[in-house]
Length: 290
Image (cartoon, rainbow, N blue to C red; front, top):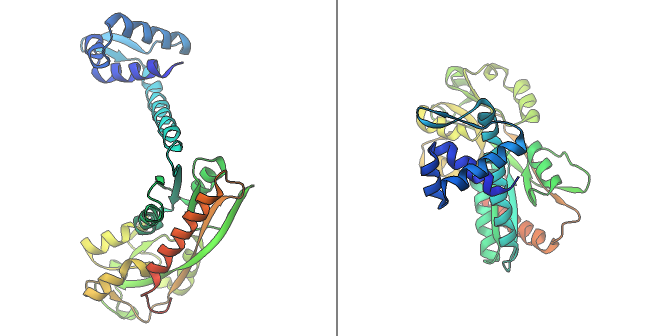
């Protein structure tokens, strides 16, 4: 199976006519037909059938379509990475949990580029378990995670404690927090257990989210109360658009970095960790009590 056949399959599935496909790929209709027949022979399945609207995917073709997209995406990524490894700084692939991606991951990438403008970067956001697997398999070089799990050949380094504060558009007193206007954000198992023990009256919130970064957007649009990282809310607290619920309990959530202990370019890892520590220090240097 060659990638030209995959490219041809995807194009024909999109434009549906041999002539249009040939024009897009600068080939003859005969060449298009040959590629599709070769692909069908390799898969031992019919991928297209002729219809009133042109070439239509069969059921087997529809099932193969998502795999073809994935194959093409992997191929393009592979070509890009190989090209980038020829650059002076090479390619570094860094990832972060979604709750750490909006600010820390972006600032981390910018800091890395400041330290070494030749460094090419690929950024990803995913949940901790998936990130650990990707670092373990070599898809990622370093990841910011919220659990201390590891895998053979990986180092897990505790970086800092993320401080979670209750903030509100409505009140600065816990007793006046309206449970009906509380959004429960899932910050992980340790937080969930502590929240349930100390704030049982808010455990049955009418709105919950497994993607905690939605909390800021919810408060901006709908108002209410939620737990958010201190590093996210300083500007809003200073402006007065959010209020700190001062007598509410505060929670801490450890943040870790994980990377290979035998990385082929340890200098890149060292540079990345240096940039990351600078970003973390800056994020928390003006936050009281951290």
